[in-house]
Length: 245
Image 1 (cartoon, rainbow, N blue to C red):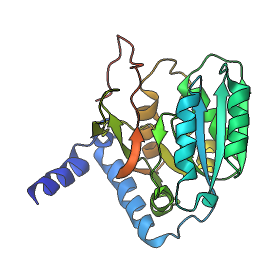
Image 2: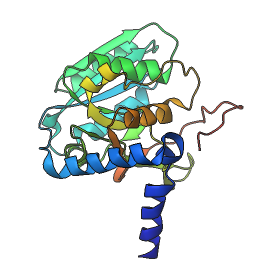
Image 3: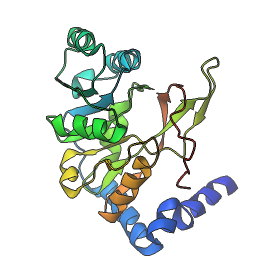
């Protein structure tokens, strides 16, 4: 009980959005978003999984294989934006063979940045309900339940995943500091709720977008999602990187 009270107090008084944007406006956004979860109907549209990649074919294949094993996979579609992978044609052929649902693919010869790749995948999706996901993830079987539960007119879902600590061990930790994945409405991107393409190195674009959701009156709800795994890869963190918090 004491631990839960401490977490509750931290969320309402010391969480990053309070310190960065102020208490009154962000608390109002959270209250409005939580009320919407009760009184607004669930989204019933097809969920477009949006992925940006560059030479991550093995990772994407693992992601798609987990999507093939998901509950009600017919509720999902796939949007992949590739930035010049060497095996792009082979990967596309594999996707078209394995994934029988709706699929949009685009490959462009460009220097990879995560923001541009994610924005490209979002822009080409053919539906309004989206889940933006990195290629090095495994998806839980009940992903649809979480997205339909938490995405409303005034709330988005920013899940907390479990991250693999090392390539040798299957040790996982909750990645509470990461905000890179989210589910929401594609139409929000008309409000510039996209990844800022001014970030050319790893880090920063996730928190930047998280705060802009608050600035636009949309609650980015954070909940742990069991079975949503981020697989280990060499760090992309530059030597001069400074965390937001």
